[in-house]
Length: 245
Image 1 (cartoon, one colour):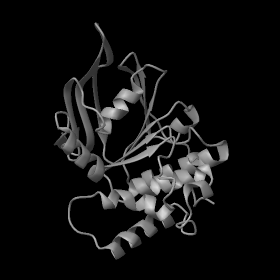
Image 2 (cartoon, rainbow, N blue to C red; image 1 turned 90 degrees about the horizontal axis):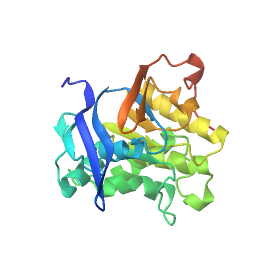
Image 3 (cartoon, helix red, strand yellow; image 1 turned 120 degrees about the vertical axis):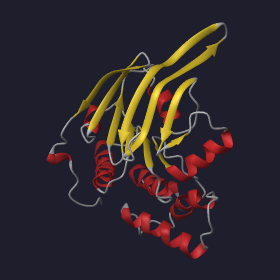
Image 4 (cartoon, rainbow, N blue to C red; image 1 turned 45 degrees about the vertical axis):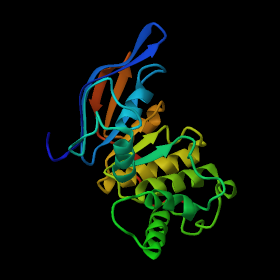
């Protein structure tokens, strides 16, 4: 595997036992993603998108095959090891935001640092780091607001800041605009495009072809296999030229 490869999966399968029936969700998928790449994953319901995302996010383990994340074999790690990888190497962005409703924006962003086990970070440095990432997504004036006091787009920006705070090797976005109106969704996609332009590695699950246009590469899944793998040039009109409002 190249040092420039962030994801390298080889012959990954995932088989679920449903009573006496075996259901194959992933059927021998092999895929490499380069560091700094923006990959979109598309496919119909039941194609294996969610299963693949769970494996890439170290939320589940494959039945067989290997998965190297930033050069580390995570395919056979136990739960505690996978939890460490999720905290240290992966930033998650979910459709439903997954914010703590009684916590402020700043407190939500601080959560991954609180659970980080490697090294000591002073409370002052934690606060400063969280404020920096909130500012980077245009929310420096919302740090004391709770999710119920913010719009959907603002909540998703808090979620993006939370994903960034530990400087992860990989950002996984699962239908990041699914709960947003078209304007707020475009703002979120522009933030992801800016992160990609800064060299971030992003993998996004989406059903929206307009969102996929922001990615430099799109793969399509069908029946647990990759049916298409397309590289394309992102239109200049899709590249964010400034911050969000």
